[in-house]
Image 1 (spheres, rainbow, N blue to C red):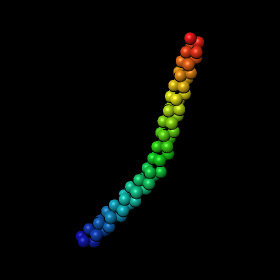
Image 2 (cartoon, rainbow, N blue to C red):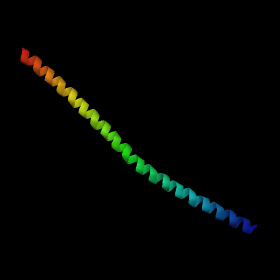
Image 3 (tube, rainbow, N blue to C red):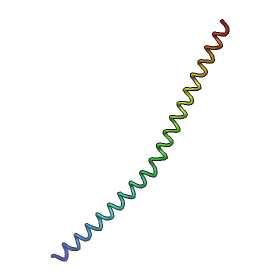
Length: 70
């Protein structure tokens, strides 16, 4: 009986260690993937800002032309 308990405890310990290794691996993978996602999101925001600036500049140019006609 004791031998069975010892084997079962050993098996559980190995399973726990494997689970911890898997968790560490997942955390590492997440960190590796998270940075490019953040960078991509920043690029998207940067492109949106540039587009808004272009639109506002175009509006300003149109108003300037209208005022010059008057």
